[in-house]
Amino acid sequence: SPNNMVLVASGNFDWERFVSDAEKYCSTWPSFVAERAVSPYPPQVMQRVYTKKNLQQAHLLFITESCHAQEDLRFPLSILATIIGDSSGSHFYWRLVDSGLAESAGADNDEKDGTGCFMAYASTEPEHLENVAGIMREILAEPLSFSEEDLERAKTKLIARLVLGGELPMGRLMALGNEYIFRTRMHSLQSVIQQVRETNRNQICAALEKYPLEKWSEFRLISE
Image (tube, helix red, strand yellow):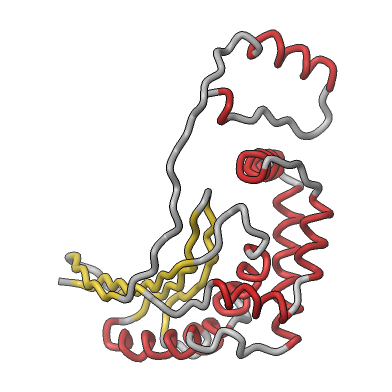
């Protein structure tokens, strides 16, 4: 439905021609309501183990409830995920990857339309699985255990990624389209960068009051 679509352009283009072509080719599309029921992800404390033949590594995933795409809490929680599980310089990196316990480890705040989740992942040798799981639980149980230097470093990383993504046409188009679909507003790259730059520990604390990252579902994939 046109009600659930956004036409976006970026770069050096002719605005008048863009509008004219949009009206020419799209104005006759019939409009109708495209609704979908969305509900928050309900966190559950559970553990599931799955097996697959010929796996060399064991895989571990923790997942719990987090913010949805319409909430500004996505900024502090994304920064927290970077502090905890970025590919370099994070808590997971130093405790698991740099130490040689895990092949890879990461964390991500994944916000969607009306729902979201916070995820932590690691792959490791099967004999290290329990040790890795214990360290991940320890880090996730103390999400505020970070310094101001950790916070500033994480914000710098996110800002760099925003700038790089904004320089690519598809990155800019997706950002604009998602912003309007999810939040019915336009934004500039600079305004998003400013929100990231202004995020502080108190905002992360407030986000954790609503989404405390406590009820984890744990999934394991191991060799048969």
